[in-house]
Length: 115
Length: 282
Image (cartoon, rainbow over all chains, first blue to last red; front, side, top):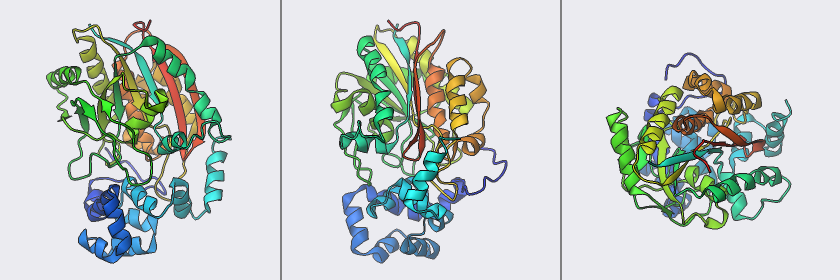
């Protein structure tokens, strides 16, 4: 893709981000497997260590900070699997990223149909 | 020769699958969305296609970043769905169609689309949600499926114009297949949505409606976009329009738009459904 500019509030998940995010995304990919989810919940720190997450990634995971995970190279498709472990859906995750409550975020989605 | 009866474009939002699992189709949030589908199902019932070619994108079930093809096609007798990690129920295996798959592969390579071929491939909600929408109750056992995955997850992604040409090469291959089988082509995903970042929740209804207008008779207008344009206009996951373009590329000749509907929001997405029949439809 020819990257011609920056879109505010958007992090383009490209090659360099995929390189940076590889350990975090690989860990989240393992959450496709019930045993992976169980092992993470049993001992988060150990599980992050096993996949070689960077300090930035570990801290973002610990804080459940979605924006920080994205900035650390997380891909939303894999972070969604992490959100699933936490019992969060994509509206909850939308709220977390935009500083809205889930209900406010849902109302924001509805408003865009009224334009 | 094999015939392409038409193309169907539909969103493949996971929440649709979850709603069907829970029987929520007639609840206020979902009713209008699901009520759009019976006419398309009836068309499929009347047309009796033998094979469905389904363009979709994998969201981290079969392909992780360790080996992520730009374009991949299945050539297997059967495809399984599996746990995606966040609770959508798995569906029974999907029947494959190897002979036409290999024919398409040969034709694609001949026309310089050097595609990845998968003789085993797990299919995720990108494919299973459309299948379940078209044949509820897992009644898709009679149809043979050819899954074709397009990278919509990690940039660089194939350009919209390339996806259209890719679809065209597949359409040409199907039409050159010596068989009397009937094929329907699906473009899945979209329309506008953005799941990630402070921009999460971005939906662009005017752009979605523009795309549904243009895809019928002027798809070239859409192939002029770059993927950056699509991210800007339709959100980071709005690049899934590329699957609609691949579907449209596979269709040829005069088209009749038999159905169009659009609902917003379904989950975080502007959800579209469109049925374009070719003159080979009955």
